[in-house]
Figure 1 (cartoon, helix red, strand yellow):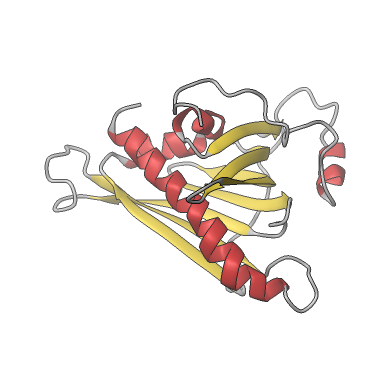
Figure 2 (figure 1 turned 90 degrees about the horizontal axis):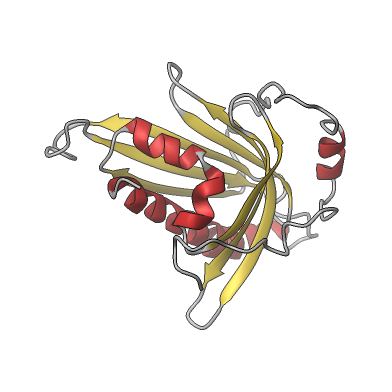
Length: 214
C-alpha cells in the first residue's frame, strides 16, 4: 500500500472498453462532444430500497471546505489509502459526469478490490449542497447514493469560527440481479461489509484531510 500522498499508477480496473451493461450506451451518447454537457438528471433519492446504509460524521470545518473536498473525486486517491484510482469518462457543467472508481475493502490479511462506474451530479449553493451518484456499472449497478452537508455551530466546534458540518452518506439498493439470493447478499454482506466498509473509510479520510487543511 502506498502512502496517502504518493502518486498512483493507472489501475487496471480503469481500462478502455471495460464498460458494462447500459454504461456503454450512456457513453456512446456523449462521444464527440467538445464542451461539458448539462448536469445529469438523477432526481431525488428513492423512498425505499431493500438495502440501506447510512454513514455520518461531524467534520470540524465549514460546509464549503468539506463540500469542495468531497466534490473533487479525482483527488481522492491522493488522500485516501483505500482508493486506487478515479477517472472521469464524461464531464458535465456542474463538475459531475460519468466517473469510474476503484477502491479496496481492507480486511485483516488482504485487500478486496472493488470497481464501479457512476453517474454523478453536484448541487451547489444557494441550494442545499449535495452530491448524487447512481451506479451504472459493476456489481452494484442500480445503487443510489447521496452525500449531504449540514452546517453546525457550537457546541460541536466552539473553537472554530465557522462551526462544523454534519456529513451524511446514504446508499440505497435492491441488490444485484441474482435469482433468490440477490437481496439477501445486498442486505447481509454487500451493504454492511463492503458499502459501509468503504464509505466509512472514505468519510473518515476526507474529514481528516479537511480538518488538516489539505
